[in-house]
Image 1 (cartoon, one colour):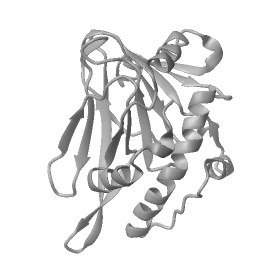
Image 2 (cartoon, helix red, strand yellow):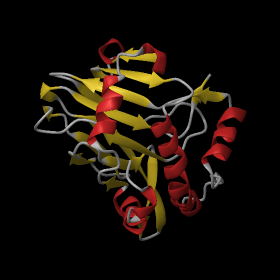
Image 3 (cartoon, rainbow, N blue to C red):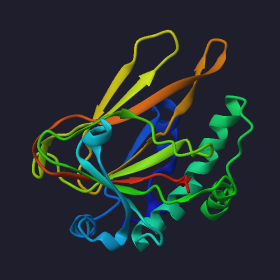
Image 4 (cartoon, rainbow, N blue to C red):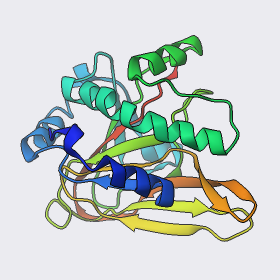
Length: 233
C-alpha cells in the first residue's frame, strides 16, 4: 500500500470541494489487488452476499465483509478517515447542518454504535459480461459519512472492457450532469456519498450525487468499496 501521507491532500481537498470526487493514484500495488480478488470465494471473510439482479440493483454480485476486516482494509479506513473528516465538517458547516464528525475513525464508529449501526459496510464487487450497477447511494442508517472510497482491483482494457464508473450530479431545478471515469488497477476514487455543498449567488446549496457502473462488455471487473459508516444491526 502506498504511503497515504505522501499523497497531495491539498489537491484532494480542492477536487472534493470543486467536483465532489478525487482520484488517488496507485493506492494499492498489483499484488495487493490480486490477493483481495483471490480471497473472493473464501466465505470466512464475508457476512452477506448480494446477487444484484434479485433486487433490480443491476447485474453482478457483491459481498459484505465481516469484522474483523482484513488488515489492509482496516488500515485504509483508519488512515483515510482523518483526512476526510475536516472536509466533511466544512460541508456540514456551510450547509448549516449540526452534524460534526470526530477527528478519528474509532470515535466515529462509536457514534454509529449508539444508533445500532454495527455491521461493516465494506464490500467487494464482481461484474462479468453484461454486469452493471444502477445509480444509487450507499446509506445504511441515520448516521452516514458524506464521502466514501472505491478501489479498483482490475485493469481496464486488459481485464475487462466497458464498466466505467459513473456519477450523476443533480443541481436543483436543472438536468442531471453525468461524470464518467475509468481509473486503473490500484487506483482509488473518493466521492460524495449523498450530497455536497456548491456555492451560488445566494450562498451554498445542496447538490445530490449518485453513482453506478456502466455495462461491462467483456472480462471480469472487481472493485472494493470502503464506506466509513456501519450498517444497522
